[in-house]
Amino acid sequence: MMASPLKLSLEQRLAQQLRLGSTEDSEEGVTTSTPAAAIPSRHLELAPHNVRVRAYLKENNVTFRHLDELKEEGWNASEGDAYFKKQREAADQKDDEQEKVFHRVHLEIGNELRSFGAFEVEGLEHGNINALNLCMAPGAYTAAMLKQYPDASVCGITLPVRSGGHKMIIPFGPQDPRVDVKFLDITMLIREFLIEPSGVPNDHPDAANFIMSSPFYGKEFELVLCDGQALRTHERAKYREMTREGRRLLAAQLIFGMTRIKQGGTFVILLHKAEAWDTICLLKSFCAFASVALFKPVSGHRQRSTFYLVAKDVQSASTEARMFIDDCKETWTTATLGGEEGTGADPAMPTDAEVDALLHDFGPALMHLAQEIWSIQADALDHSRWHPGSATSKTRRSSSLQSPTFSETGEPSTPRHPNSVLGARSRWQPSSPNSPTSPGAQFPKHPLASRSMNQQKYIYPEVDEDKMKKMAGRWR
Image (tube, helix red, strand yellow):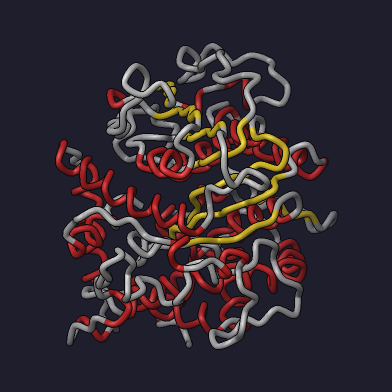
């Protein structure tokens, strides 16, 4: 579908800004790309490299093309802006009741992750495990882990409430000795992240705030969950703007988790936009040292780009894993100490040649991995009340958004997910370049698809379903 004139002109203006901002040496033929900071974070998706990725996916994947059309309609609709603005405002005003709702929403998501098999560790179907939950609060996913492994030991790091973090709702410490929580800003553990520690300049805005300790040093974990995202309520120095803070936080979690995961362990990561350049690079990296699947919960995040990377049998001691950790350290260092002022810089944008090379090498596998999560988001947007092009904005449809009915055994007789079997999503290992990419194609079933529904039982708290869907969108 052709972009609207307004949209197209915006893309052209951004591309022109980037070209004008670059420095070119015609004799040497060298071009230095403008940092991503040159683009407003809201329109980062319209940066030339991301536009190039979207063009490739729209040409080669019917599902993504439909999703992109729906998103484009939403971008040009005031209803969508008002809808998500209201959600953001509510999320920033966290009272006790909203924290409880937030926790209950994530309990549902945690149960879905558990049913999907996201917390399973190769060779450890039963027994005790050591788990690491980064950005733990309010603790819903830890509760889901403990439901699967009642005798597990869970260590966690989470932002203190006084700094803008969420409250811990589940018991920990003396109340539950299985759960050990450190309250700190994980992005400030500088000894963990510097490739070559050389000290921090005294005039750095956070010189006095960096943390020199190494929590849980020497411990190994069979299961690692990284669920952090930059919070608008987080009190931090001005140089840590939202886009850069998100990059710092993800890099910090990945470094900390990868340096403590046991060989062959399971790694679960909250991500956004499988079609974004940074996300694609991360997915490709994990596929080099782990078996990968993508999971999108249906009880929350349906209309948003949020999804989870589930990596099994992580070969943390491999050369590829060590290179990945070093890359993450470079990302954190650049975002924290880079630039002329030493207060952080954004990475250079990839060239067209780099984008084309990655898509040629990894594009088919990406489409196979992301097919299901794009389908779920497109279906949710197509049924949303606020979306201008949806049928429900005119006549509300129930379709796949209807609440499930339960049998006497507690099983949902009406599946909450378009698939009749939750596990039948994607292979753990990405497919070959000949993988099918159309919505109607027959994909290989996930190993969990052979389970009976009794083994995949959902456990839902008694909540107002409509309220849960509204509240879930508040925390992206």
